[in-house]
Image (cartoon, rainbow, N blue to C red; front, top):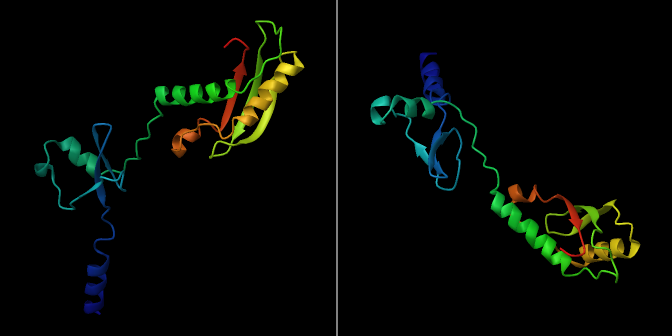
Length: 167
């Protein structure tokens, strides 16, 4: 009986110890209970406060922390929005004698490959030919340039786009 208890103790003694990983994200050292990047380093189980420069790091390595998620850089989002608008604008053929203050607004739902899944006219320009021209330009511009990173794509899944003839 003692032999079985000893075997069970040995087999399950490490099951309560969580693996701790160390990563550098955006220049900041982060510790987590799961790999937090391609360069994740497993922290040895025997780390003690004496092994590191501060008690805070020891506490961080022995507590569960969710991974840090960063919002996509505004410049990247703006760049892709500009690319999308530019591609569509290049395909718009406005009717002649269109008033300068004309504007039309569409909501576009995209697939991860940049194809239009759904296209909805939100606000008409009151000029049917211009509305049709913009709609046709959106469809002709497929696939639209979108980021390949899934985290960034979520910002582009549904777009609200407004067009004016002189922009």
